[in-house]
Image (spheres, rainbow, N blue to C red):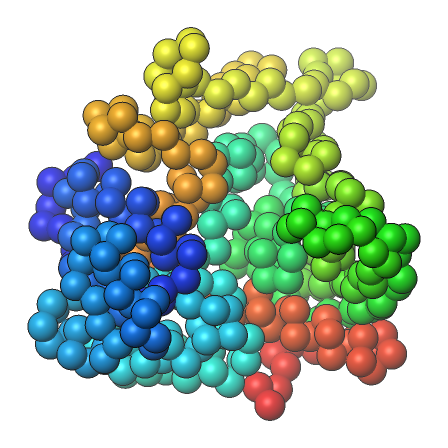
Length: 382
């Protein structure tokens, strides 16, 4: 962590996520001297007041007034998904660097407006796409960056995440610099047997929407995407997996709900059998505490270990805070923007990448509407 001047942050949106996720994480980063949370805003007076009182911060329904009176540098946009675009644009127009929740906007035209407004004002935008920032994904990306697997040829999202999240998962394995050029998609609705939802809905017949897509990249590599809209709450759709097929090995996440196992393989010394990589979580103590690191024992004589260190370990240990993997990922999104603002650099993911993820989703659905006809990228913003 750093001893630099804290970046001033306002939370924009009175959602449960503002209260339960961003509030506690920003409080932890404030304890480390990274940020100072100065105010909250919501379009609705009741939610603004409730969030302000909960976090012991001044609350506003007038964003321009908030900016004048509390002088934030960064706005964390945490609103209803459909409002990401309008509120993100409003924050930029009020002079704030912005962390916007996913997707940056459901509309590509709105996404472009936010990006253009930020560029005209020399402001930074980060998108809160945290999946690839979670520890298990970070150690896989470190392994891919090590060169042990060679080039990844095909990447899969197999119910690991919906829409832009799932697209981002598979793109992270190929590298975010890989350029998608064509999408073929199929969206289908099917009836399901009566069953209950984990969101406490009564037992009843349900319909599901399945989404499937093949994504071709400029260099000939492929992304394969699968999702179902009941994938987060139905006992009928328990599978969780993401995969990559690489030049020198492969990786497979095998999961039932959140109980996932990573199967990562290279070749053994004989070059005739798979060499399974062992992943170990290193905690503060053998019996727990905050996560210190993830270490991959590769079986490769030249690179026997690849290690990912939790960048928030000191903060968590010194302040007695416990963060699970998703909170570590969200904190990574916040710090990407904080460091970009403070150092004059670019966020590590950024608005352009968030837009690409959403553009692929738009292309998949348009392809399905056209009867499975391939859709070339870029797609029309209309």
